[in-house]
Image (spheres, one colour):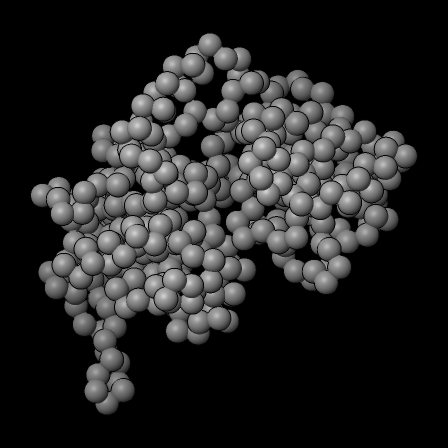
Length: 365
């Protein structure tokens, strides 16, 4: 029986052996491909690639004693996280009932709404539900008030080494990120070109063939001094984090009816601004040389893989503070009772907060 501090599960598109063979093949091919044409080196992970990759890489960088996709019948863990997959979550729930782990977390891509799939997120065996942003937390709590106090906001991080601008690059274009808003994108190109702003458009569509490759997006960002985000609403905003990691601020569009909505999570005064009208956008672009945006610095301080995984571990540690949990008595009175075995040390190291600046190497993954 293997014991880990943390275990990660996600639905597999194929067997891990097939994924690992594919990963080895692509990594070998990447050695002869110029960096400008190279996508991020693949990881043998499943689920939503950005979320799974970030958690696994971050835990490795932190030196956490963890496992990815272990066999449940041979595994025990302090805490477990199911990132995606209904069958995987059902198996993890049964495993937790048998005492396989002390804490079970689920999300952020298991279901779209808390009542989907027979309300599986409301199962009493799930200690916390993980979501990618505070806006999703508010939505879940409004739809399922019983989740209030049981949701952790844990965004996925970014590979700051891959998403890094080339030194001395010419930044002379406005990049338009079009996520299913072709008419607005076409209008933008016309208006901005007339006003002296050369444009480039990158599209993210419904079908696979209508989506860009990672290296195409990175190359476009490498030529841009600003990125205009055309998206109705984003639960996590990974494409914006990649943009900020390249040092490119974003101007996020708020469509009619969304003027007061946070359509792009984590957008701040350091990473960009919102706009709703063409005049407002032109004003922002003209004032851009005088703005004090610091998107790359913000990412390096808040949203690398290691930082996001450290935040996840710290949130898990807080659940276990002093080995206590809350139990409701018959009379409605609540008291704190000790978890069997008493207090346990914090995951990763014997302190309450994990410092992501003190990174180690993990031998298990």
